[in-house]
Length: 352
Image (cartoon, rainbow, N blue to C red; front, side):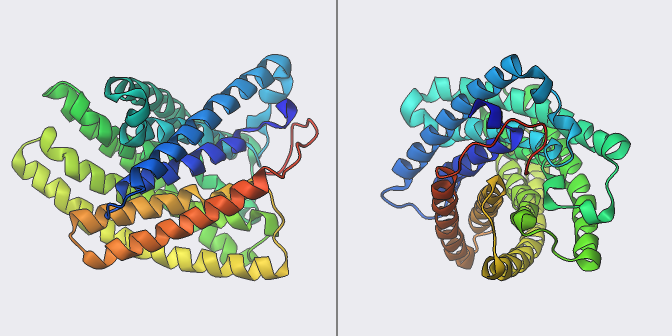
């Protein structure tokens, strides 16, 4: 097991943590809501601890392997999964984990993981594309949804940062956090738009590609859904940091931007689902890329939930519930297949 750990395994933490966060943010309250949120947050936190310990052991006992992952084009983008795992569990501490560890501890955990996830995520957002440009040198046919992994963490930081604003001292600290989150929103959004355009070109000119990489098409939903979530959450907390007129403008931006990007996200969801069904009929082998079905779909759930509440759109409340049921189905399927997966031999290369 130690020798099989690569950064992509942290996608399981992301995929599990988003089930917790999405449950709490649903626009409908139901009896088991808190229990589901707490259970999945505890599982995600446990996975994060276990994978961190194993990954640290890998670095200590197999340093030449662990330090070479960023040189492997199929593995390097998934360093973003480590940052997003930290951020997802951190934000989940405020949403659900406080029922277990207490409110003060939840703030400390979230602040710590947000800081670690944000710093490492910003490094990934620049460092991995740098490696792509200068060392990996791929062709258009090599473009996959996994290219989005290193550029999405700043968007997750923007969403997660919204929850911390209320816990900062009133005044400049809150303004700085709010503006910093919008800056990260912009960093991630612009990079994601460029990559999605490249991915569209690859799909149009070279086709779907290898079956095992088809799940990575779902990663596109990550920056789309997460940006809708971030715009909504930041607009909601803006009154705690800026004056009323600016807060109203940011709230309205969250709705206008959100519904526009949500439409594109639903169109991509339809395309990704159609391609996936087609591939399943032919043969879709299991690999860790199947976790791509979970976190990205979860961000679409949270984005839909925020739009339903902030825009007071009743129909979206039911869409959010339907998407969440799909997320639970996806997580159950992928988790069940993951526990059956046998560790692979030690190698610097491997499947994404």
